[in-house]
Length: 438
Image (spheres, one colour):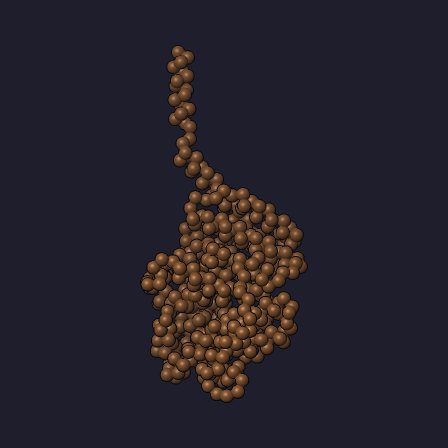
């Protein structure tokens, strides 16, 4: 009798004992709960830090009560530093996830938290060099280039820009014919936006109801800005302080709209926030690795939407007529602009030297005029950007180069525009870090 009871008990225990699959499922659930807790506290940390840094929270569309709580509490920086370090330690204890996407999420949260901790230290008075700051905040360091690198490009421009006298003055005179008249500005941008959206919608399924509002503003240190509102909506502002040249219409329409910032945020909201419940993507911390991905994809997206001769054709047949500019001059203008684009890293060099205290404000303006071919007014506006956003400048050019290199290395991309769009959308919809693009 005892033997039968014992056998029955053993059978019952065997039936109730969890198998390997049950154990894995419970482990996955525990990890999911742990990640959700860390993600929620990360969002609240970013919102709290935004109370000390007006530029820090670039977008937020999570629970309103979390923002209200941050505004009421106004936690001191010392308290935020403690919270950031505790969260970092916690996220580093989370076991490695089973899937690639979840692994990317875990590493993303760790690096975003590390960047938040660095930003807190900066607000507390810690001084970092330009490169130390960009590594800490954006997970990347831009190359250092000598004057000779830019001079080689300027020498090529000497033969392409008409007129006589110093090259910067000749370039400014050359560009005057390509300024969009203020009365035509809205029509040109509307045409550019339509073209960018039409090309994007061919390859990326955009959620129903996505849209943005376009506004013209002044008194800013930037030329354009996307303020993501959530619910698949953006507010895009364009700065009219300085003349807007015809090439900037397509650049800004793609960069701020399609397939740039607007599409990036829409896809994150759709695939990561709504489909997966990853609350950390309801907030965008501006001074963080996510910014390099956002700016890099927005700039590279111009090439994705208008590859090779497609851009020149669109400009010549649509935007030049809309602006009232002679379309016959389009090819010559873009030959010059292709060389000027190669001077993009001159802005990084000016910012690095200026923010490191190696040159004065006046020296930085002179550098930008000489090596980036900026007018005095545009150079001064750029230095205001350096003052406000510091090493953020690397996210545009280095970000673009890292994104381009990553996508162009993917199998099949070189031979197929469709594959390029697929890889581009995959990057837009994932929590990939700048250091994983190299």
